[in-house]
Image (cartoon, rainbow, N blue to C red):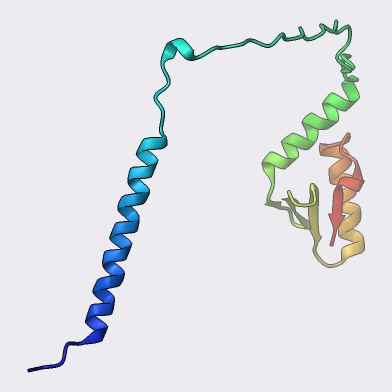
Length: 136
């Protein structure tokens, strides 16, 4: 007759004990749950304070018209930005949005072509400042 395997018996006993534990746990939970009737529920309200009202007289914004020189300078810069990139015989202009500057690349001879660029700027966009340009 073959010997009974003790490992199989041990596993079966552990499974049986686990099932017994689960059944007792589930049955004890069912007995502790109480049904609450709606008539036993009492709702209490807490007093609330009204928020104070604040009268706002000013927003902090300064509402005034910009001087016409500023408006015209911004319009000229916007027009120049729309035209970039472009190339002339003495220089080329492109806009660098990361630095918010115009990049001017001068051809050789740079001194003569820098003078030509400054004259071109004065004639075409007189209100745009030269410090808005990076000359290379």
